[in-house]
Image (tube, rainbow, N blue to C red; front, top):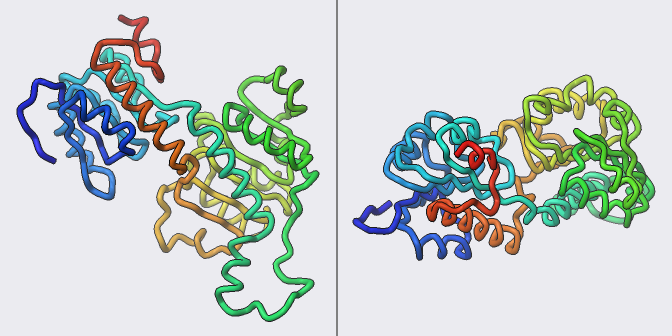
Length: 332
């Protein structure tokens, strides 16, 4: 990182982001950016925020009360992500610092990936690829790698927000019965999509596929624990495209090993990333990918642009267009 004298407001960007957003920030600000492949150490973040007016961060950065407090001149925090569970919103609000995020833009990309995981787990696609690569495919065989059908089955969606709703729309194309559990009922969506509000225990017991799309909160931490997994069908498949800690990793490992459920597809894990020697990665009935929900060119460019818009609005003293703590303006 290079530091120079400039009349433009100094900002710290915790890692390179798509040029569509970064260019806007560079045009208006003195940019200090961590160039490492891995997230910056916390001590680096603390040092940089002490000298900056704006912070553009990612969900891998711990923006806790200590970091917020270190930003003596900090006027805005802009995160290139929908979730902000890595940011102490209460501390930021108390300091009068608005926090931006990027909702909505990754909905369709994440819903697409959810269905990709669901189909891949149901039809054992990774196992099939490995089977061919190992030279084991010698002829058509009637009993090899039999999977589960998706058409007409029951999908249970936990969290019917934007992404959960987009997944429900895709499920209609597979003639699936869709159950959902959410913090509140969605009568309009029930009428539009034919989804059925269901208590969580009943959803787990009835669903052939359970897809998680709820935010990470104290209430949803380890929502899918041993008790929840044992309620599911032994033929059920669990998909997590929400946050890793929504699922108890140790309980999931036992469930997959011992046959409480048939398979899992994980875009997120706890811890994240999983160590390369983690036993989940050795299970043929567990698909793990590296948090790719929003990983399309279009989605990531729009996320970067929204993050830049939030950052620049905060530096101009304007209301953030996508604010995660709007109460900060009421406090003022």
